[in-house]
Length: 385
Ligand code: SAH
Ligand code: SF4
Image (cartoon, rainbow, N blue to C red; front, side, top):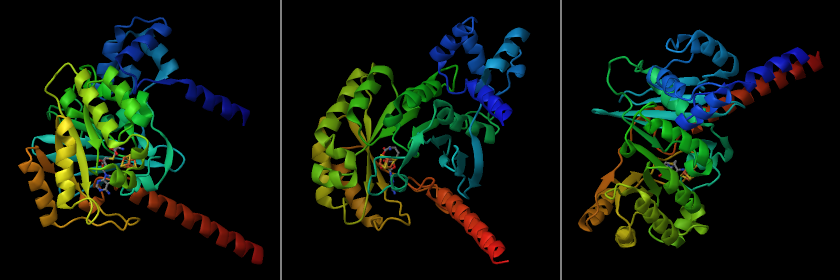
Protein backbone atom coordinates (compact mmCIF):
# COMPACT_ATOMS: atom_id res chain seq x y z
CA UNK A 1 0.00 0.00 0.00
CA UNK A 2 2.71 2.42 1.11
CA UNK A 3 4.73 1.33 -1.91
CA UNK A 4 1.82 2.11 -4.28
CA UNK A 5 1.40 5.53 -2.76
CA UNK A 6 5.09 6.31 -3.29
CA UNK A 7 4.83 5.29 -6.94
CA UNK A 8 1.72 7.39 -7.34
CA UNK A 9 3.44 10.43 -5.82
CA UNK A 10 6.48 9.93 -8.04
CA UNK A 11 4.39 9.94 -11.19
CA UNK A 12 2.32 12.92 -10.06
CA UNK A 13 5.50 14.90 -9.46
CA UNK A 14 6.62 14.67 -13.06
CA UNK A 15 5.87 17.96 -14.75
CA UNK A 16 3.56 17.76 -17.75
CA UNK A 17 5.12 19.89 -20.51
CA UNK A 18 2.15 19.64 -22.88
CA UNK A 19 0.42 22.79 -21.64
CA UNK A 20 3.49 24.96 -21.16
CA UNK A 21 3.78 28.02 -23.40
CA UNK A 22 7.25 28.99 -24.53
CA UNK A 23 8.18 31.30 -21.63
CA UNK A 24 7.09 28.76 -19.02
CA UNK A 25 8.99 25.96 -20.74
CA UNK A 26 12.10 28.15 -20.83
CA UNK A 27 11.72 28.83 -17.08
CA UNK A 28 11.29 25.12 -16.47
CA UNK A 29 14.44 24.27 -18.43
CA UNK A 30 16.40 26.91 -16.50
CA UNK A 31 15.08 25.43 -13.25
CA UNK A 32 16.61 22.05 -14.13
CA UNK A 33 19.90 23.62 -15.21
CA UNK A 34 19.33 23.45 -18.96
CA UNK A 35 19.55 26.05 -21.71
CA UNK A 36 16.26 27.86 -22.39
CA UNK A 37 16.69 27.67 -26.19
CA UNK A 38 15.89 23.96 -25.93
CA UNK A 39 12.28 25.04 -25.40
CA UNK A 40 11.86 25.76 -29.10
CA UNK A 41 13.07 22.31 -30.06
CA UNK A 42 10.86 20.61 -27.50
CA UNK A 43 7.80 22.67 -28.49
CA UNK A 44 8.28 21.70 -32.13
CA UNK A 45 8.48 18.01 -31.25
CA UNK A 46 5.32 18.19 -29.18
CA UNK A 47 3.13 20.53 -31.22
CA UNK A 48 4.45 20.20 -34.78
CA UNK A 49 5.23 16.49 -34.72
CA UNK A 50 2.83 15.16 -32.10
CA UNK A 51 5.64 13.42 -30.18
CA UNK A 52 4.98 12.49 -26.55
CA UNK A 53 8.14 10.51 -25.88
CA UNK A 54 11.42 12.31 -25.10
CA UNK A 55 13.43 9.43 -26.56
CA UNK A 56 12.17 10.37 -30.02
CA UNK A 57 13.43 13.96 -29.72
CA UNK A 58 16.57 13.19 -31.67
CA UNK A 59 18.07 16.65 -31.68
CA UNK A 60 18.31 16.64 -27.89
CA UNK A 61 21.38 15.00 -26.38
CA UNK A 62 21.02 11.59 -24.78
CA UNK A 63 21.66 12.93 -21.28
CA UNK A 64 19.01 15.63 -21.63
CA UNK A 65 16.49 13.11 -22.96
CA UNK A 66 17.14 10.86 -19.98
CA UNK A 67 16.86 13.74 -17.54
CA UNK A 68 13.60 14.94 -19.07
CA UNK A 69 12.12 11.44 -18.94
CA UNK A 70 12.86 11.42 -15.24
CA UNK A 71 11.43 14.78 -14.25
CA UNK A 72 8.89 15.54 -16.95
CA UNK A 73 6.29 13.99 -19.20
CA UNK A 74 4.07 14.87 -22.13
CA UNK A 75 0.68 13.63 -21.11
CA UNK A 76 -2.39 14.33 -23.26
CA UNK A 77 -5.83 13.69 -21.78
CA UNK A 78 -7.53 10.39 -22.66
CA UNK A 79 -10.24 10.04 -25.28
CA UNK A 80 -13.19 8.11 -23.86
CA UNK A 81 -15.08 8.05 -27.12
CA UNK A 82 -15.03 9.43 -30.63
CA UNK A 83 -18.13 9.96 -32.76
CA UNK A 84 -18.33 10.85 -36.46
CA UNK A 85 -21.29 12.61 -38.01
CA UNK A 86 -22.33 12.02 -41.60
CA UNK A 87 -21.58 15.70 -42.32
CA UNK A 88 -17.91 15.27 -41.34
CA UNK A 89 -18.25 16.71 -37.84
CA UNK A 90 -16.26 14.72 -35.31
CA UNK A 91 -16.78 14.78 -31.56
CA UNK A 92 -14.58 13.46 -28.77
CA UNK A 93 -15.54 12.82 -25.18
CA UNK A 94 -12.45 13.35 -23.11
CA UNK A 95 -11.92 11.78 -19.72
CA UNK A 96 -10.84 14.21 -17.06
CA UNK A 97 -11.08 12.03 -13.96
CA UNK A 98 -13.80 11.45 -11.39
CA UNK A 99 -16.20 10.09 -14.01
CA UNK A 100 -16.22 13.53 -15.64
CA UNK A 101 -16.08 14.15 -19.35
CA UNK A 102 -15.60 17.20 -21.49
CA UNK A 103 -16.22 17.44 -25.19
CA UNK A 104 -14.35 18.74 -28.18
CA UNK A 105 -15.93 19.14 -31.61
CA UNK A 106 -14.31 19.42 -35.05
CA UNK A 107 -16.42 21.10 -37.73
CA UNK A 108 -15.10 20.96 -41.31
CA UNK A 109 -16.30 23.63 -43.71
CA UNK A 110 -14.68 23.66 -47.14
CA UNK A 111 -11.04 24.60 -46.68
CA UNK A 112 -11.66 25.46 -43.05
CA UNK A 113 -11.68 23.17 -40.07
CA UNK A 114 -12.86 24.65 -36.78
CA UNK A 115 -12.15 23.00 -33.47
CA UNK A 116 -14.47 23.87 -30.59
CA UNK A 117 -12.54 23.46 -27.35
CA UNK A 118 -13.71 23.22 -23.71
CA UNK A 119 -12.14 25.17 -20.85
CA UNK A 120 -13.88 23.82 -17.73
CA UNK A 121 -15.70 20.71 -16.57
CA UNK A 122 -19.22 22.14 -16.36
CA UNK A 123 -19.80 25.84 -15.74
CA UNK A 124 -20.83 27.89 -12.72
CA UNK A 125 -22.66 30.63 -14.59
CA UNK A 126 -25.93 28.82 -15.24
CA UNK A 127 -27.21 30.59 -18.35
CA UNK A 128 -30.83 29.56 -18.73
CA UNK A 129 -30.46 28.09 -22.26
CA UNK A 130 -27.21 26.14 -21.81
CA UNK A 131 -26.89 22.45 -21.09
CA UNK A 132 -23.34 22.82 -19.73
CA UNK A 133 -24.68 25.36 -17.23
CA UNK A 134 -27.28 22.84 -16.02
CA UNK A 135 -24.50 20.46 -14.98
CA UNK A 136 -23.01 22.92 -12.51
CA UNK A 137 -19.27 23.45 -12.11
CA UNK A 138 -16.86 20.61 -11.44
CA UNK A 139 -13.38 22.00 -12.05
CA UNK A 140 -11.08 23.99 -14.30
CA UNK A 141 -9.22 22.15 -17.04
CA UNK A 142 -5.44 22.38 -16.90
CA UNK A 143 -3.58 24.06 -19.76
CA UNK A 144 -2.45 20.57 -20.84
CA UNK A 145 -6.07 19.39 -20.96
CA UNK A 146 -7.05 22.44 -23.04
CA UNK A 147 -4.21 22.36 -25.59
CA UNK A 148 -4.41 18.56 -25.38
CA UNK A 149 -7.77 18.80 -27.17
CA UNK A 150 -6.01 20.35 -30.19
CA UNK A 151 -3.20 17.80 -29.93
CA UNK A 152 -5.65 14.88 -29.79
CA UNK A 153 -7.70 16.22 -32.71
CA UNK A 154 -4.62 16.44 -34.94
CA UNK A 155 -3.54 12.97 -33.79
CA UNK A 156 -6.92 11.51 -34.64
CA UNK A 157 -6.73 12.95 -38.17
CA UNK A 158 -3.14 11.79 -38.45
CA UNK A 159 -2.38 15.41 -39.28
CA UNK A 160 0.96 15.99 -37.53
CA UNK A 161 3.44 16.48 -40.34
CA UNK A 162 1.34 14.27 -42.57
CA UNK A 163 1.50 16.58 -45.55
CA UNK A 164 -2.31 16.80 -45.52
CA UNK A 165 -2.08 20.52 -44.97
CA UNK A 166 -3.81 22.21 -42.12
CA UNK A 167 -6.71 20.24 -40.74
CA UNK A 168 -7.50 22.55 -37.84
CA UNK A 169 -7.45 26.08 -39.26
CA UNK A 170 -9.48 27.75 -36.50
CA UNK A 171 -9.97 27.20 -32.80
CA UNK A 172 -12.92 28.56 -30.85
CA UNK A 173 -13.07 28.42 -27.06
CA UNK A 174 -16.81 27.75 -27.24
CA UNK A 175 -17.05 24.31 -25.73
CA UNK A 176 -17.90 23.66 -22.11
CA UNK A 177 -17.09 26.28 -19.50
CA UNK A 178 -16.38 29.97 -19.16
CA UNK A 179 -12.82 30.53 -20.41
CA UNK A 180 -12.28 33.76 -18.48
CA UNK A 181 -12.98 31.99 -15.19
CA UNK A 182 -10.02 29.70 -15.94
CA UNK A 183 -7.85 32.58 -16.95
CA UNK A 184 -4.23 31.46 -16.66
CA UNK A 185 -4.72 28.03 -18.19
CA UNK A 186 -6.77 29.41 -21.07
CA UNK A 187 -4.21 32.14 -21.74
CA UNK A 188 -1.37 29.58 -21.71
CA UNK A 189 -3.25 27.29 -24.10
CA UNK A 190 -4.23 30.10 -26.49
CA UNK A 191 -0.60 31.33 -26.51
CA UNK A 192 0.42 27.86 -27.68
CA UNK A 193 -2.28 27.89 -30.36
CA UNK A 194 -0.88 31.17 -31.73
CA UNK A 195 2.87 30.53 -31.22
CA UNK A 196 4.82 29.58 -34.35
CA UNK A 197 6.53 26.91 -32.28
CA UNK A 198 3.07 25.72 -31.24
CA UNK A 199 0.18 25.54 -33.70
CA UNK A 200 0.99 28.79 -35.52
CA UNK A 201 -2.62 29.96 -35.90
CA UNK A 202 -3.14 33.65 -36.51
CA UNK A 203 -4.85 35.71 -33.82
CA UNK A 204 -7.86 36.06 -36.10
CA UNK A 205 -8.29 32.29 -36.11
CA UNK A 206 -8.27 31.74 -32.37
CA UNK A 207 -11.46 32.98 -30.71
CA UNK A 208 -12.31 33.17 -27.05
CA UNK A 209 -16.02 33.35 -26.27
CA UNK A 210 -17.10 34.83 -22.95
CA UNK A 211 -20.41 35.50 -21.27
CA UNK A 212 -18.90 38.72 -19.95
CA UNK A 213 -16.60 38.47 -16.95
CA UNK A 214 -15.66 42.16 -17.20
CA UNK A 215 -12.57 42.37 -14.90
CA UNK A 216 -11.00 39.35 -16.61
CA UNK A 217 -11.71 40.85 -20.01
CA UNK A 218 -9.58 43.83 -19.00
CA UNK A 219 -6.81 41.49 -17.85
CA UNK A 220 -7.04 39.57 -21.10
CA UNK A 221 -6.45 42.73 -23.12
CA UNK A 222 -3.13 43.19 -21.28
CA UNK A 223 -1.74 39.78 -22.25
CA UNK A 224 -3.50 38.48 -25.35
CA UNK A 225 -4.40 39.26 -28.94
CA UNK A 226 -6.93 36.47 -29.23
CA UNK A 227 -10.16 37.26 -31.14
CA UNK A 228 -13.06 38.01 -28.88
CA UNK A 229 -16.64 36.76 -29.04
CA UNK A 230 -19.18 37.93 -26.48
CA UNK A 231 -22.36 36.07 -25.61
CA UNK A 232 -24.92 38.86 -25.44
CA UNK A 233 -28.23 37.09 -26.19
CA UNK A 234 -30.39 40.05 -25.13
CA UNK A 235 -30.53 43.76 -26.00
CA UNK A 236 -31.47 45.03 -22.52
CA UNK A 237 -30.52 44.28 -18.92
CA UNK A 238 -33.96 43.11 -17.79
CA UNK A 239 -33.96 40.29 -20.33
CA UNK A 240 -30.23 39.54 -20.12
CA UNK A 241 -30.48 39.23 -16.31
CA UNK A 242 -32.85 36.32 -16.93
CA UNK A 243 -30.84 34.57 -19.64
CA UNK A 244 -27.26 35.26 -18.56
CA UNK A 245 -27.25 35.68 -14.77
CA UNK A 246 -23.73 37.15 -14.68
CA UNK A 247 -25.34 40.24 -16.25
CA UNK A 248 -26.57 41.18 -12.77
CA UNK A 249 -22.92 41.72 -11.80
CA UNK A 250 -21.70 43.17 -15.10
CA UNK A 251 -24.57 44.76 -17.03
CA UNK A 252 -24.59 45.34 -20.79
CA UNK A 253 -23.19 48.88 -20.80
CA UNK A 254 -20.21 47.80 -18.67
CA UNK A 255 -19.64 44.71 -20.82
CA UNK A 256 -19.69 46.62 -24.10
CA UNK A 257 -17.34 49.26 -22.65
CA UNK A 258 -14.94 46.47 -21.61
CA UNK A 259 -15.11 44.99 -25.13
CA UNK A 260 -14.23 48.41 -26.55
CA UNK A 261 -11.29 48.70 -24.15
CA UNK A 262 -10.15 45.25 -25.31
CA UNK A 263 -10.17 46.37 -28.94
CA UNK A 264 -8.40 49.62 -28.04
CA UNK A 265 -5.55 47.63 -26.48
CA UNK A 266 -4.97 45.68 -29.70
CA UNK A 267 -2.15 46.86 -31.97
CA UNK A 268 -4.31 46.15 -35.04
CA UNK A 269 -7.00 48.84 -35.07
CA UNK A 270 -9.26 47.08 -37.57
CA UNK A 271 -10.41 44.31 -35.32
CA UNK A 272 -14.00 43.76 -34.25
CA UNK A 273 -15.78 41.75 -31.57
CA UNK A 274 -18.18 38.98 -32.57
CA UNK A 275 -21.47 39.40 -30.74
CA UNK A 276 -23.18 36.04 -30.25
CA UNK A 277 -26.94 36.05 -29.95
CA UNK A 278 -28.76 32.76 -29.35
CA UNK A 279 -32.28 33.14 -30.73
CA UNK A 280 -34.98 31.60 -28.53
CA UNK A 281 -38.58 31.49 -29.77
CA UNK A 282 -40.83 34.01 -28.03
CA UNK A 283 -38.06 35.07 -25.62
CA UNK A 284 -35.53 37.28 -27.43
CA UNK A 285 -36.43 36.90 -31.10
CA UNK A 286 -38.97 39.68 -31.67
CA UNK A 287 -38.32 42.43 -34.19
CA UNK A 288 -38.28 45.00 -31.38
CA UNK A 289 -35.38 43.02 -29.84
CA UNK A 290 -33.50 43.19 -33.14
CA UNK A 291 -34.05 46.97 -33.36
CA UNK A 292 -32.98 47.46 -29.75
CA UNK A 293 -29.90 45.29 -30.38
CA UNK A 294 -28.95 47.38 -33.41
CA UNK A 295 -29.14 50.51 -31.22
CA UNK A 296 -27.27 49.17 -28.22
CA UNK A 297 -24.37 47.87 -30.36
CA UNK A 298 -23.68 51.27 -31.95
CA UNK A 299 -20.92 51.84 -29.37
CA UNK A 300 -18.89 48.77 -30.42
CA UNK A 301 -17.11 47.80 -33.65
CA UNK A 302 -18.64 44.37 -34.09
CA UNK A 303 -20.20 41.73 -36.26
CA UNK A 304 -23.14 39.64 -35.14
CA UNK A 305 -23.50 35.87 -35.13
CA UNK A 306 -27.06 34.61 -34.63
CA UNK A 307 -27.24 31.11 -33.13
CA UNK A 308 -30.62 29.37 -33.44
CA UNK A 309 -31.27 27.81 -30.03
CA UNK A 310 -30.30 24.13 -29.87
CA UNK A 311 -32.91 22.28 -27.83
CA UNK A 312 -31.90 19.77 -25.13
CA UNK A 313 -33.89 17.59 -22.78
CA UNK A 314 -33.70 19.79 -19.67
CA UNK A 315 -34.97 22.91 -21.41
CA UNK A 316 -38.44 24.03 -22.50
CA UNK A 317 -37.10 26.69 -24.84
CA UNK A 318 -37.76 26.34 -28.56
CA UNK A 319 -35.83 27.29 -31.66
CA UNK A 320 -37.54 30.06 -33.67
CA UNK A 321 -38.88 29.31 -37.17
CA UNK A 322 -36.66 29.93 -40.20
CA UNK A 323 -38.85 32.93 -41.05
CA UNK A 324 -38.49 34.47 -37.63
CA UNK A 325 -34.71 34.04 -37.79
CA UNK A 326 -34.56 35.55 -41.24
CA UNK A 327 -36.70 38.57 -40.23
CA UNK A 328 -34.46 39.19 -37.19
CA UNK A 329 -31.38 38.92 -39.40
CA UNK A 330 -32.82 41.39 -41.94
CA UNK A 331 -33.32 44.10 -39.32
CA UNK A 332 -29.63 43.87 -38.36
CA UNK A 333 -28.49 43.81 -41.97
CA UNK A 334 -30.63 46.88 -42.72
CA UNK A 335 -29.05 48.60 -39.74
CA UNK A 336 -25.65 48.03 -41.35
CA UNK A 337 -24.26 45.11 -39.31
CA UNK A 338 -22.35 42.21 -40.80
CA UNK A 339 -24.61 39.42 -39.53
CA UNK A 340 -24.32 35.66 -39.97
CA UNK A 341 -26.56 32.81 -38.87
CA UNK A 342 -24.75 29.80 -37.47
CA UNK A 343 -25.78 26.57 -39.13
CA UNK A 344 -26.17 23.56 -36.92
CA UNK A 345 -23.72 20.78 -37.63
CA UNK A 346 -23.28 17.30 -36.28
CA UNK A 347 -26.96 16.97 -35.35
CA UNK A 348 -26.79 13.18 -35.46
CA UNK A 349 -24.04 13.11 -32.81
CA UNK A 350 -25.37 15.91 -30.56
CA UNK A 351 -22.41 18.10 -31.36
CA UNK A 352 -24.33 21.38 -31.57
CA UNK A 353 -23.51 24.46 -29.57
CA UNK A 354 -24.62 24.25 -25.96
CA UNK A 355 -25.25 20.51 -26.01
CA UNK A 356 -21.77 19.43 -25.17
CA UNK A 357 -21.16 16.64 -22.66
CA UNK A 358 -24.75 16.31 -21.56
CA UNK A 359 -25.34 13.14 -23.52
CA UNK A 360 -22.12 11.35 -22.74
CA UNK A 361 -22.31 12.32 -19.13
CA UNK A 362 -25.94 11.28 -18.82
CA UNK A 363 -25.06 7.94 -20.29
CA UNK A 364 -22.04 7.46 -18.06
CA UNK A 365 -24.00 8.43 -14.98
CA UNK A 366 -26.87 6.23 -16.06
CA UNK A 367 -24.61 3.24 -16.58
CA UNK A 368 -22.97 4.01 -13.25
CA UNK A 369 -26.42 4.02 -11.64
CA UNK A 370 -27.24 0.75 -13.39
CA UNK A 371 -24.04 -0.78 -12.14
CA UNK A 372 -24.77 0.30 -8.59
CA UNK A 373 -28.34 -0.92 -8.82
CA UNK A 374 -27.11 -4.27 -10.13
CA UNK A 375 -24.64 -4.47 -7.24
CA UNK A 376 -27.40 -3.70 -4.76
CA UNK A 377 -29.63 -6.36 -6.26
CA UNK A 378 -26.75 -8.81 -6.01
CA UNK A 379 -26.07 -7.85 -2.40
CA UNK A 380 -29.75 -8.17 -1.63
CA UNK A 381 -29.80 -11.62 -3.26
CA UNK A 382 -26.81 -12.75 -1.20
CA UNK A 383 -28.47 -11.47 1.98
CA UNK A 384 -31.65 -13.40 1.18
CA UNK A 385 -29.72 -16.60 0.53
N1 SAH B 1 -18.96 30.21 -21.69
C1 SAH B 1 -18.68 30.83 -22.92
C2 SAH B 1 -18.27 29.87 -24.01
C3 SAH B 1 -19.03 28.58 -24.13
S1 SAH B 1 -20.66 28.65 -24.74
C4 SAH B 1 -19.82 31.69 -23.37
O1 SAH B 1 -20.90 31.61 -22.78
O2 SAH B 1 -19.63 32.49 -24.28
C5 SAH B 1 -20.47 28.99 -26.47
C6 SAH B 1 -21.69 29.65 -27.09
O3 SAH B 1 -22.80 28.73 -27.17
C7 SAH B 1 -22.19 30.83 -26.30
O4 SAH B 1 -22.49 31.91 -27.11
C8 SAH B 1 -23.43 30.26 -25.68
O5 SAH B 1 -24.29 31.26 -25.28
C9 SAH B 1 -23.97 29.39 -26.77
N2 SAH B 1 -24.97 28.42 -26.32
C10 SAH B 1 -25.03 27.77 -25.14
N3 SAH B 1 -26.10 26.94 -25.12
C11 SAH B 1 -26.73 27.05 -26.30
C12 SAH B 1 -27.88 26.43 -26.88
N4 SAH B 1 -28.58 25.51 -26.22
N5 SAH B 1 -28.23 26.78 -28.12
C13 SAH B 1 -27.50 27.68 -28.81
N6 SAH B 1 -26.41 28.30 -28.32
C14 SAH B 1 -26.02 27.99 -27.07
FE1 SF4 C 1 -21.36 28.79 -18.95
FE2 SF4 C 1 -21.24 29.80 -21.43
FE3 SF4 C 1 -23.06 27.90 -20.79
FE4 SF4 C 1 -23.33 30.38 -19.83
S1 SF4 C 1 -23.41 29.76 -21.99
S2 SF4 C 1 -23.56 28.45 -18.65
S3 SF4 C 1 -21.19 30.95 -19.49
S4 SF4 C 1 -20.84 27.65 -20.80
